[in-house]
Image (cartoon, rainbow, N blue to C red; front, side, top):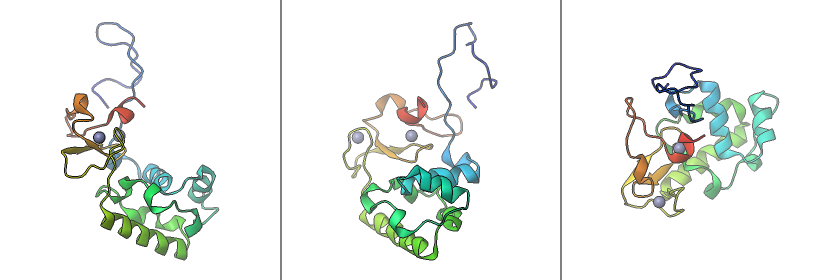
Length: 158
Ligand SMILES: [Zn+2]
Ligand SMILES: [Zn+2]
């Protein structure tokens, strides 16, 4: 909530409000929403994600994206991997745990703005998509809200 009652369509001076959703920090989301987002970081096929969420399918290792394509957000501390364990087969889960471990070891975080490695440059984590940006790539958006959250331009305009 950004200090405005839900459903308000006019600004305080009567102008039409810009259609701009206020993102929610990942850690503030309900578990079911977290589960859906996490599965989408790992699996390309939205049908598979849907079936898994409805418990009509257990995810196997063949469904999981290759290491480089798994979103690095899965490595962040706000993410509890165990939340999605029920959606995987035993083999699928073991494979995922190993993949996440390997990904963590490789320490490659790519800035979505310039597609380059974050490296040791100053960087900032979006509290919604949990992706790291170079501070210089998102220079206009450095301020944090009152809860100390920061959101990237992609999440801010969703
Ligand atoms: Zn960058
Ligand atoms: Zn974001």
